[in-house]
Amino acid sequence: MKTILVTGGAGYIGSHTLIELDKAGYRPVVVDNLINSSIESIKRVEQITGRQIPFYKLDLRDAAALECVMEKYNFYACIHFAGLKAVGESVQKPLEYYNNNMTSTFVLLEQLKKHNCKNIIFSSSATVYGIPEEVPITEELPKGQCTNPYGKTKSMLEEVLIDLQNADKEWNVVLLRYFNPIGAHPSGDIGENPNGIPNNLMPYITQVAVGKREKLGIFGNDYDTPDGTGVRDYIHVVDLARGHVAALSAMERNCGLAIYNLGTGCGYSVLDVVKTFEKVNGIAVPYTIMPRRAGDIAACYSNPQKAKVELGWSAEFGLEEMCRDSWNWQKKNPEGYNTGE
Ligand code: UD1
Image 1 (tube, rainbow, N blue to C red):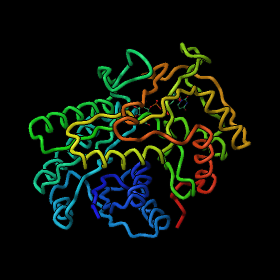
Image 2: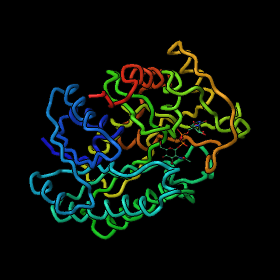
Image 3: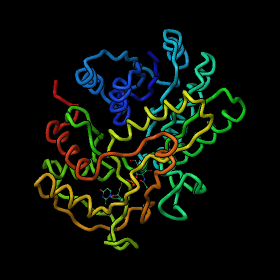
């Protein structure tokens, strides 16, 4: 059984990936500093899988702490989710973002190299395309100018990993560019658990639906899109999680450097998401049109063919399932993982 180091495994995408790793016969080991995540997610994953998940609370910048974990296991690969990810906050606190996301990855890579684990999957983002020259976006499109430090750390870390693989061909580096993950595990026991006011669309919608917020603000209805609202490629987080398992199988074939979009290839507008959520769940989501949000683009959706052809992976869930499962999680856990205990 192959052991996988999962950094940030207590987070939204990480926790869902633990379940898919377990299903596929891998043994995940989690390191997470829990600054934006909850140990409760790991407990819930253990309930769902019926298996114990080794967990270490540590900050990746603490090389000595990480080294202790590296010495304990013989890791086949690392899936590196850990990082700060709030776009607006990254503009306010650039040093924190650069220090955290860059330094933690440098320490991690040194440790992986030292312990001869040269397989890494990196959580990148569609944000690296900047304002895309065209949609749907293929991996061949040039990267663009990111408007915020969060996006820049993703783009720079891609470069770091590409240089590393170029210098030492023993490395297998898979860069996964996520589009917009939403949804939750169908059990409703794990899901997205944002701190404070959500920045992203779906958690805001579910908090309006559950009565925590009065109404959704739609950021602009004058974009050059069919209904004027922003168009994105929403992908069910369980599909995204499965994409990581597919990427691990590419490593078994010694893929070298590989870059994949993980999206569905379908673009939906903000109004499409609101209407589908209302229809599927039978619950109203009041909204108001607001000015555009700085840094937003009109349309961003993937061409997911490369992952389909090379990894045999494609998204299975549609927008209705995404809306159903997001609501199921929020309804069962109105306070997220804050169970009040
Ligand atoms: C954002 C980040 C992206 C990051 C991703 C993580 C920016 C510019 N991009 O993507 O780098 O990888 O989150 O999940 O911030 N919307 C509303 N009202 C809201 C919230 C969002 O109308 O309250 C709209 C947005 O204008 C956009 C769409 O919903 O058209 C999706 O927004 P969001 O969920 O924040 O994701 P992105 O902006 O695409």
